[in-house]
Length: 522
Image 1 (cartoon, rainbow, N blue to C red):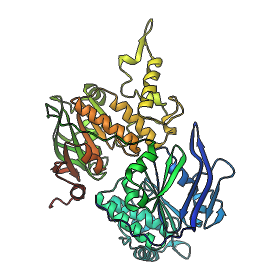
Image 2: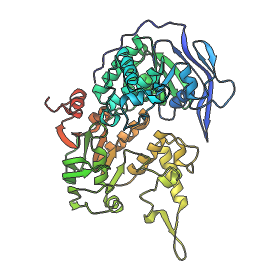
Image 3: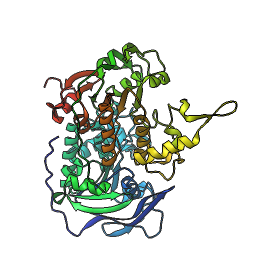
Image 4: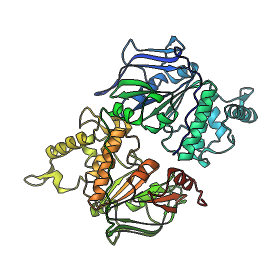
């Protein structure tokens, strides 16, 4: 994706709008922030970059008042004056607003209602003044070049516009320091470009912007300065013009990245055949509409689309987690429509689900238990007793330790409950479990979401190894870099239909982004 370089206004060399000194935050068995110092210049776009579990979001949650530092001595200064931020209202009173990675909007309410929620203008203190509400929302949206329909219902508008609503929410409350956590996670390339244009416009108005990210392209395209964290410590702060993606990656993970090699492999027999598949979503609406798709041995088929266009329902239908309305799914030449999930898994499918907490894991189970989920009935995990079989915990723990090291799962113990790990480390547990099987077909939905470049490199390498071994892989991802790097063929899905098949050697991010947005006349 070609993104124009930012035009940076004059930034004072010595005026810092945010200063954080000696910040410490600990969770059970983990030091998330280890005596961190961070200084943000007034009017700059500052990227906070680091691998998963590096402490980026924790540090910003402290600045926003969601957490408090653990030790005395930690200090926060705003415009040179020390402040006490114990809860988000304190942050807002100091001009700090935060847009979280998972939007905090009420789907059935309008744009205007979401923006003013908690600060509603009223008539005589009793009834909501709808006209005044719409007027205020329109004023602030026009003032910040973020024009939007105040009457639109949240659940009916695209993700990129929902993010605009989140930004307007904090601007409405007077924020001049904006924190955005992984802001491009679910956006198309066109939406990313629009977001960057918006942020540069806000910078030109004098706003200070902090972006939390694990992606290398974002700070190189947008930021003025970049602070890299690793394992809870600040590794360094660099000017964008004086660094490179390679240097940033090495700062993030402590070594150079490997060069990805994708060998040419002749396509062999068909492994998975999906024909004219129709599937409903949770509301009874058609989410997958007549999808036909083949996955062959020794190939990766990338399914590109904006999240919410039927990819999740398609994956769940293939794996037996969602009923099929019509059409067929064949695995190794056998129709599996009516098989339950366990039998489908045993027959040769591995599944990395999009929602790691809902369908991928059990938060109250420990890591070792989560790493054998779906495999727990296999004989290899049991040892024979006098009258029955008992689980072989020694073997389970040995395999768990191996996978924890192999996938760099940051945990104090293999007996730690999964729910106490960071989101990215929870994802690593699921990826480790599924990719360590010996499947014929892997359904990988957003497999690297929330992972840092080092672990992304490992996951990509493992997927390519499975491809070389003759496995078939359906890669469902909204990350077009990932799709273009790994795929042998690309299918683009929009509103539940495959709208195009693309060759990764001849297509590009711009074209894929337009197709993902429904522009099929290109």
